[in-house]
Length: 76
Image 1 (tube, rainbow, N blue to C red):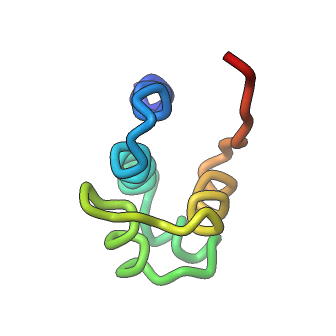
Image 2 (image 1 turned 135 degrees about the vertical axis):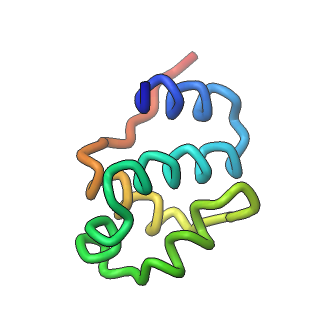
Image 3 (image 1 turned 180 degrees about the vertical axis):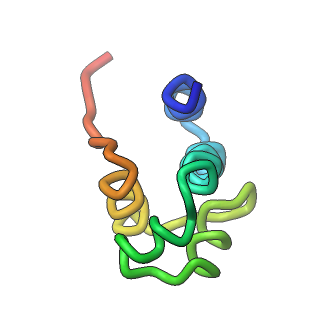
């Protein structure tokens, strides 16, 4: 599932994997809609949320909010 993909990416600690997982979810739910809701261009989102992307934290937060996700941290 999409949530399992994202959880695995977050558990990996690999920022590029996390960005790519968010990109996979955004593409599945409609990149045009995500772009409109975040105020970012589709091209910028595709570039940032790719296997080689390295998005800014603000981009990640905007995309997460658009996808109905909430970023949180917990102690290990």
